[in-house]
Length: 353
Figure 1 (cartoon, rainbow, N blue to C red):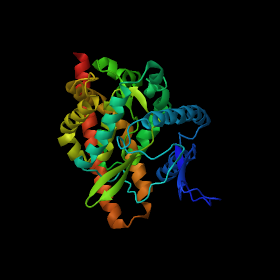
Figure 2: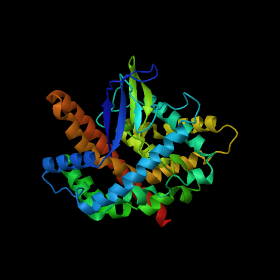
Figure 3: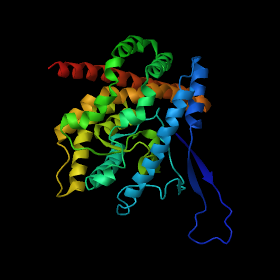
Figure 4: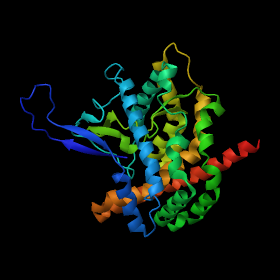
């Protein structure tokens, strides 16, 4: 929902505190329009994301998202220095050099993911002390108020068409099953209420915690988190929203399946440290169960864009690199689809009692 411009200013009478460079974040629909236009052209389908009614709705949402991000940064800047890695400023922000992006077709190790979990624990613990007035600055209904515009029937049909066009023949049967369960899976009102259903206290969630919103620097053979960015859809809700998105986007399917419980246990330990003498907002078992219940919707929100992002980002790669990246993307997508269907069936059985 934004473009980032690097500014190399010609300062007049430069003060020693002024930076050599800085970045400016500009709210615009152009990024989404260009992205969806390119996908539609490649896949030879209609661009249902570029209709006047949707663009008008999104304009209102984008203004709110901008204000939410400013509010989130204002709170985060009150934290002790070093608690969470953040760029200095918002809208006009610090330019950070020597960064490494981890794209959707790449995977993080569980060791790297733990750095993100540590930062998330700080955010959640901080939010426990918010006054009712401070809480009211954030949405408690992000799925209907923010994501709802993207989940209209015609847009869901378009997403499924994009997903089918990217998927391999081996995914066709599972993709067909996904299409049949989609009306039951995309329950946005329920997603808004998940914390309440689970008896969990609502906490501040990042809302869009995935590969492209974490900046890294190389540290030998490892990665060191440089900054957590993009708080446009920060909201008060269920922490599982962040965990499902993070693990679906950043881990290989194998690592996610084998280590998700271990990572949540590790996270819960971080949160205990940050909460100190304060009452924990939920139990570890509530956290794990909310992850299981949210997984189908959370995975669906990330899965259809993996292929299109891969197609666009990898255009300039050589064929060998592109082939290796495609294999990784297909494995990640297949694992997500398997687990989405598994947890959906499991959750439907729970509802039946």
